[in-house]
Image (cartoon, rainbow, N blue to C red; front, side, top):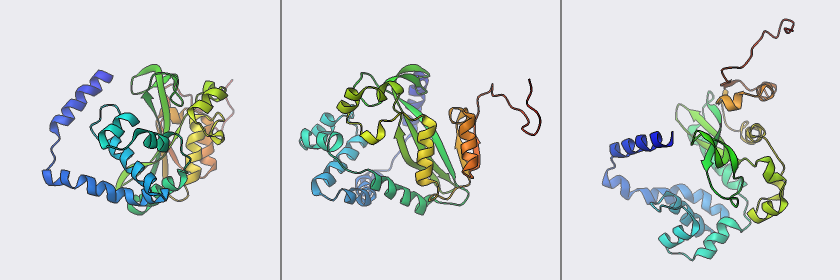
Length: 255
């Protein structure tokens, strides 16, 4: 699967063409987009660190770590590392600003909210949530992190609205490991991927106009999740596994 993706990626890159004048506008447009977000940090240093980290993630730096980004853009490594890994700042206002922009620019009454778990290959024990679990990107069980994303789709476009990192059970039982990784105490209780999806729906569902909830067969597999959406008054189009049993709820259940 990975080799097939790499081949297709090379094909897409060969087809890419960008006019020089479009490239010249990228950085100014990026700063314009970031302006309402970085002002939430309320500090010149934090403002600059936010810009540096985003530019680093979008740059051609091969390894997207703090040391490489600091080397590429010039700032001292420790302040940038402190901003990303240790400093206390509330990300909720940043998420709310994004949700507000999505509603303003893409919102439509028949929009669709999409819940989707995604795996990211990752080695070692230090990165938060790393464990041997199913990784769709690799097509097998391997060391990875898993995030649950909430996307918004309308005829005007599509984008991500929010995300939650999934903590496997073994992580929630190791206090020392959680402390070292800097996991907030409020986020240490074990929650399934479906509970994380419901949490995001509760935060954003009422403020994002939509008619449907959609997801793949992992999201549609548990019966309780589909019933919970129904109880919330949501209409869903969730895929289910091919071996899902179905019956008429109006008649007596079979033996």
